[in-house]
Amino acid sequence: MTEGTHPRLDEQVEELPLLTDTATVTHVEALDERRHDEIRRAVHRLLREHGADVTRHIGEEGIAWRPLLDATADLDLPDVTREKLRTLRGRDERDFPSLVEVAFDPEEPFDFAPGQFVTIRFRGTPRPYSIASSPNAEEMSLCVRRVPGGRLSETLCAELKPGDHLPELRGPNGEFTLQDPCAKDMAFLATGTGIAPLRSMVNYVFEEGRDTYEGEPRDIWVFLGASWEDDLAFREEFRALDAAHDHFHFVPCLTRERYLTGWTGETDYVQQTLLKYVADGVAVPKLDADLREYLEADPETDIEARIDPGELEVYACGVSAMVQTLEDVCAAVGVEGGDIRGEGYG
Image (cartoon, rainbow, N blue to C red; front, top):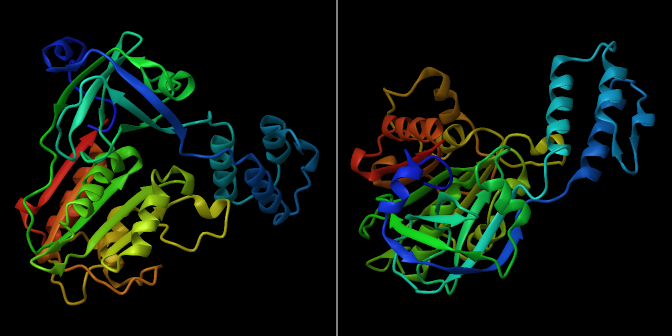
């Protein structure tokens, strides 16, 4: 339950265990970035390729989007170019910050399992959020995506500050937790803030020595999907783990980052990218035809390790439809049903 939909939450929240009647916010950190300069340069490049002179609509203070799009309305631009312009406009006009980590100290510490969620109340509004920190961490943290019109996320992103109090914390809840240690490798699959409970799990795995079993390392994968690179929560932590451990592999999957930068990593969706790293020779009779091509595709990274689906635990979190797709793909390539755990929201 990373953020969002708990059925009949208002009615049920009072029935959840009260952990503490106050928690103090210690920091609120923006995880995304302001990228207006990059967007201006990208729009310049994109339109110059088609001989369009719209520099009068792009200035130091930003892009005048409506006049710019009006000026390009009669130009013979490819549909893909117009789609890129719409995408860049959406990113340019996005509120900042739109992705934050909220850390807090509960008045009364409590135990929880990696992957569980708590329900917080702020200014009278309760919402469930997955715990993004390890049980071993000094502070607890959440990962919050601003949802336009959302009941609480806009307030948390725009107004929450250190020193504020969360007057109520309930939980912990959830059965999306780690299996007992074994020799199998582990794959953590997420989009957006679905990475929150997985970050808790990954950190705990390394802190407790679960990244090895009976002295042998387990390959541990994190496939994280987003539109833009700065939408990858905790990306530098995962890159540091990747650099520090030969058996840890971080694979960002960015569908739109190439619109802004020279991104050379994976650009497909998480389920498509995962298939590129499956070991050769795996029989996949149940895999949909439109996904088979990815089994033959070369990865965009220099990771040499490959995934044996029969020796893999999978933990997937994100939007419910995406989680279901990931679970179906993992089952189709041979991951055992009992080794697939997912949690969806929205």
